[in-house]
Amino acid sequence: MNDGTRTAGVHYDAEYEKHDTGPYHPESAQRYRALKSALEDLPPEFIRLPGRRASAAEILLAHEHYYHDLVYRDVESFAHQLRTGDTAICEESYDVTLEATGGVLASVDAVMRGDVSSAFCAVRPPGHHATATRGMGFCIFNHVAIAARYLQSRHGLQRVAIIDWDVHHGNGTEAIFIEDPSVLYISLHENGIYPHTGAATERGQGAGEGANLNIPLPGNSDGDTALRAWDEQIPPAIDAFQPDFLLISAGFDAREGDPVGGLRWTDETFAEMTRRCVAMAEKHCGGKIVSVLEGGYNPAGLASAAVAHVRAL
Ligand SMILES: [Zn+2]
Picture 1 (cartoon, helix red, strand yellow):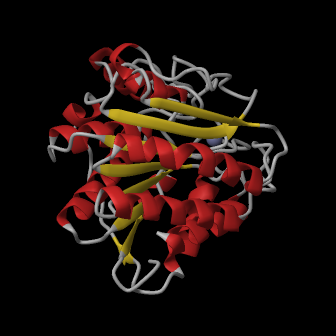
Picture 2 (cartoon, helix red, strand yellow; picture 1 turned 30 degrees about the vertical axis):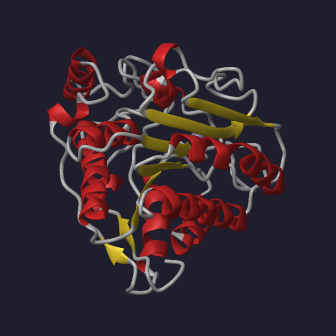
Picture 3 (cartoon, helix red, strand yellow; picture 1 turned 135 degrees about the vertical axis):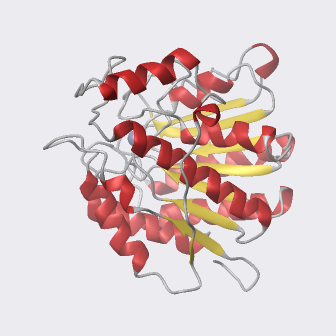
């Protein structure tokens, strides 16, 4: 929390350790364990938020029925990979990902009730690469995309903004909302890496023209470069859109020392971005923010950056 009027919640749950991706996988349970012990050390004014299991109907807010069923069947058949590609699964993965989505939705409810101003959800597996019909990039169901649709259908909000600062472009989130003018998707990401989407020229399609903003950053660039690009492009986009709620796809793989990402952001970069998000949310939507863990593959760096983020929420 950044002053006496904001309260921040944190959501984490031992369920998220049960998604077993096998040895040597960067998206490992060790990430969760490092993060959990860091979040447990936060002072008591950071309120721990309980989760719940998402329903299949909630998953269908952002995914096709057949893809939901495909995930269920792949897990039931003890497959080690989702058949849609590069996503390790185990026999617990369907249940864990429903808990992860449900944890995000429960946190959204807590913010909408006013229990907390904002919340950070330390969930696994991540979600932003999952499209309506395909899991990929370690992602099964797209928690943030589901949360955006849930805010509209369950809470009656009109416009939801998503800021995604994971080092990778959130191709799944972009694709789900590419023709939707009611969800503004903004991504800062390293140029030229997986999943090789996220060109600055992609501004949305059809009715969604203008509701998509990609900010590719040069490899090996630092946090100041990112913050300069942020200040030029993001506040005007948010001011024009006037969101009713702000969601963050909070990956921490742009941090220095991450074995996957190639940027050099620091904990202070994430704190600065968070303060900017709080200021924009205070201006437009009563300060309401839910932030959801995406990537971040150096467990100690992930924990340190996420704590800097949560302390600024
Ligand atoms: Zn990532």
